Image (cartoon, rainbow, N blue to C red; front, side, top):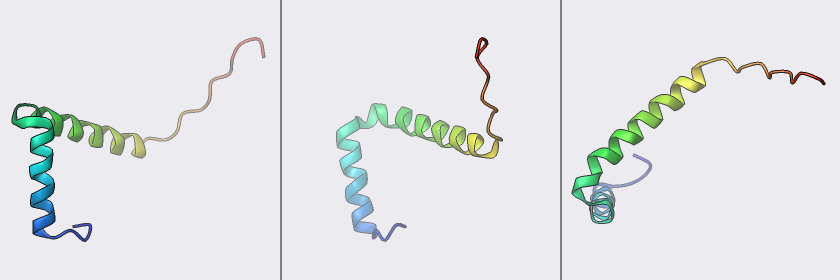
Length: 56
């Protein structure tokens, strides 16, 4: 994955755990998943037409 080996991924996960703590990690991952879902949903939708401002 992204040219990273098992050792690099393990070190990365330990650093993330130390920075965010074990209590906040599930919330952080849940929010990341929701963000990814919203991004994919937005990419599938057609762009909205710009609304005209009255008086112009």
